[in-house]
Image: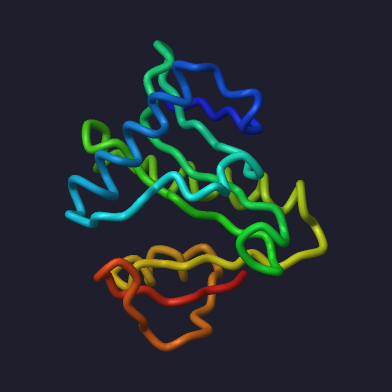
Length: 147
């Protein structure tokens, strides 16, 4: 059963911080074969949405950046589902929850994301609109989208 917790960087337990960084590395660096520095000096200013099961294992994750941290708008990023739990709809559940959290935290701002092109339809189903031409970031095609 997926349960959500939204925590500031300072609220993260050592265990959750470790699991978050391990999972992001597993998905974005190893699985996607993308060599980049995931620790980008923004995590300290963001809110972290943890999708946990009853035993506190991290099944899914996103982060919410306040306006002015990554973009003028608020932002959602580092969206992932653990490879162990894919195909169960968790990506949709955590994204829906994260959008609601972002809108509650920052009600008067647009949400801007940098989406991998192959996920453009996924994000458009949540009401995001593409606002850029595709561009390469870390050798992966992306677009900017807003909601």
